Length: 254
Image (cartoon, rainbow, N blue to C red; front, side, top):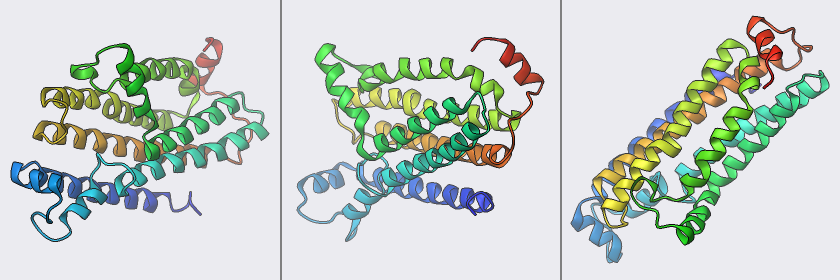
């Protein structure tokens, strides 16, 4: 049923992502006003309109344990579930890439847990205890994540080449969007954070972090689309004969 309604599901997720990001951006831009920011900090009264602070807390893409973080975590968990379904089927079919599918599923389950609990932020304290992270490296976890992402990408090159061409294109697009947001744009946000004296209320930081989260959500939805497409193509099918691209990848050690 999920696969049959994939188009509707993806459209609904895309629409929800647009709503969350737009509402978050508008509320956060309003909150950059110094007077409003001071009222929010003091908590003396509700600035702008009654319930503003609550809406900001619910929708802000830079907050934890709210609608935005739940949505991101759900997107990644959906991908993990689809990947595990493919992994089980490919293992039964004797596919040489079954273990790659299984590990990919665990990786996305971890990303989902990380998004919900901001586990990666614990790396900031470790990095800060070793070096003084400043500028684009203000969020020290990037120093840990970047080499791990590179190693993962290199380990999965053969797997990527073996995917159907249309699935492979979507996976590459999703990776560029998600990693570009999570590490690339996050670095710019770190620079804005550092230039503003370690505060997140500046206009530059609000814009950078909003773009980052928009990239991540778009990348996660694109990847989910790729996995749903892969599931339609692979689940229930016998071990596939390698096409021209796959024959080259099988002949080359990954």
